[in-house]
Image (cartoon, rainbow, N blue to C red; front, top):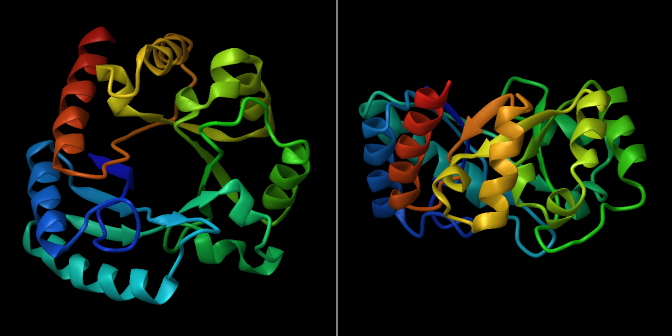
Length: 213
């Protein structure tokens, strides 16, 4: 199983705090049946250190290999940060050796940014395959589900935060996730793991989803 969204790299964002916690997360991921992890540290205006990310990624990649897990580097790029990125640099924020970019919006905003469509168009014109991270957690989606169809019509793919299935982020996120699952809107299920417990929740969520299909 491949996990395309994880904050497993230590000391780079609000995920793993140190190498020890990263190592524990690797064990938990392995126990959950994960064989490949795309590490996706946040790319945000308030904190982003590419050099530290790449250095710590190399350290963790070797540790992952010893546990039989393939670790690749990507990013979870916040909408506001993306506005600062030149078109010829979009690929720098994609999963390594792919054109897939994991895009997140503000969890607290009640409306989509007004220039949202134009930016998605720019990304696609640059050959980027857009994956929207955890849409079920956005307030504007919970309020107006029509945003989902707009994204799908635009050619975007959607990634479920598996923790929402086990109620980690409240009833609204769980209810929205269930509706999107029933409608077959998701292309990916991921852990969005920030700690060991998140991988244990990921395993439970995957089992629940498999049993319901």
